[in-house]
Image (cartoon, rainbow, N blue to C red; front, side, top):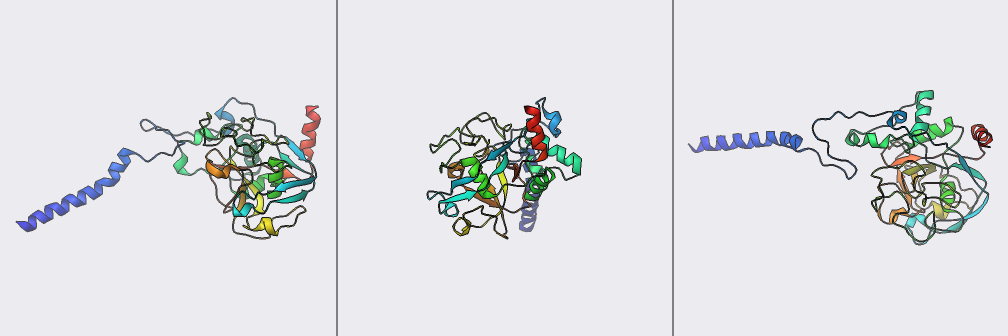
Length: 300
């Protein structure tokens, strides 16, 4: 009799364990802060960028950053942001905006390059990341580098990116040294953007040179390999990337950024093949390209 009871208990335990995955499926997965519940079994349809909205594609222009010194790094930041130094850079040009979905789609159509990757866990929010003028995301460092080369440009060096976003006076944010919780598209306040905004939407996030979205919207790949002590070791005239490394540098904040990482001096790092919904890029050039010159003539 006792043996029969044990068999019954054992059977009930097995059935309970077998039912756990079914209960989990019925209950649903835990949503990220950027996903909303979907009622019923709704098929997720991912729109192409140009069909997602009726928005006209933004005109990408390059901003000239004049030759001269600027203050790089800060003594009040992290270890890899020190020491603060005056660095000299030659004249260069940088995209006013982060590369958009529309612009990247032209690259994919022209070259057959792979489309931006989309992890399945973000399927519910993918439709909100595909606006014509939203920054392209889910691109690796290699993808970003290939796009810039296709445009006759390159990724900005880490020093170029910081000067373009910060200016020459050592400010910690594009608008100055006074922190603003709503100064950029961050996760710190309810600014109306659950994900990335169309490039240039937040007018306070504008550098002294007029370059947009350096503090927020999406984090950006730059050309350099990451080296923790490079600010101490690098030359002070046009510092190049370290010769090798494991990680590539990411600069700027994104729409999920909170806390102290929002300084324009903050440095991040990631494996070059990593792709995420918070990471995009923009291009730079030593000289303005022929296409950009043509655009300038057309706008006159």
